[in-house]
Image (tube, rainbow, N blue to C red; front, side, top):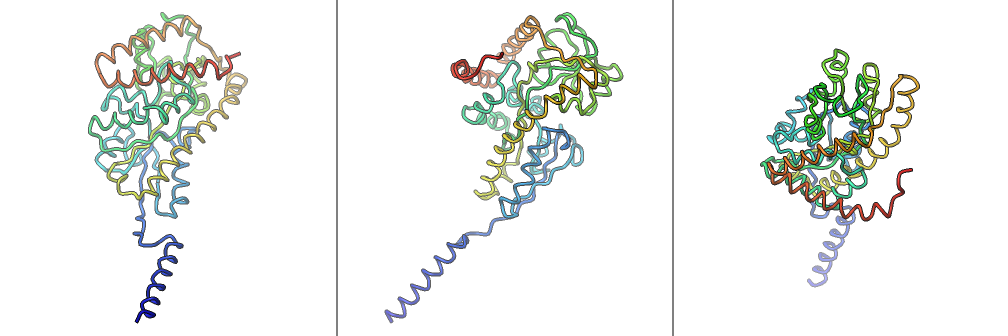
Length: 358
């Protein structure tokens, strides 16, 4: 009897060892998920669609086919500005865009997680998001308003140009009354200076410039703006992009969908989003210089640089916007104070660690 029991025990132990070695010991089979991602921007635009394509291509490979994303071009499933509500209600499981699109619904503080006027360049921005309180505050912005979404940074891009103009801007007075397409907090700054700021979707900017509806517009980096043909109707391209020295994109996933994922699937999403963000930045930095050269030599564009006096005026208007928004919204002030404290500490490092621009 004892010998028989020992045989049974040995058989059980060997079975457990075998199952454990194959990775399926007492484990429930991972559920396969198919997640739709409507996009705010066409995936063909360089730098704007690459990070989400990176996620969609690599997730099935790393998850052994249990985690699949399908991307849908803008308006194929629903209009971009309806995506947040759709993810919140699980009409779709996720979406890809920028947080600033929802600032009217969630609060102006959400703009801090897209771009900050006179704000951090990409390395500092990444440091605050991932190693400061940035990502925590980003999620809190949605949670405070009751949105059932989980947010992930998914891509960061190079500085934008600060606008394509049909005429030269020589002083702040030239902006007064000028119809301009401008995004986010930067638009509030130009409004302070008397510009007539309009919100026009990216695909409609060229037509508005061509018809004279607007006399200036910003949208993105040189590589994208040139692809959209702005140089054909506006020859003055201004730098630096004081309003967006770096721009974050986001992936929103419905929290119920997120919570239904296994720990492995969640890890794959988190790590792929980080990898895609780094890959996107490296790519965007590599493709701008040839476009700047092409614009001048082939398209007759004049690359203009704002004077120090003009930048001082713009920054002064930004300080007024911060003060006003902080008084209206305590959470805006919370995020601003946290970012400012981080940047003060970071400045101690950057002054010693980096070369002064030559």
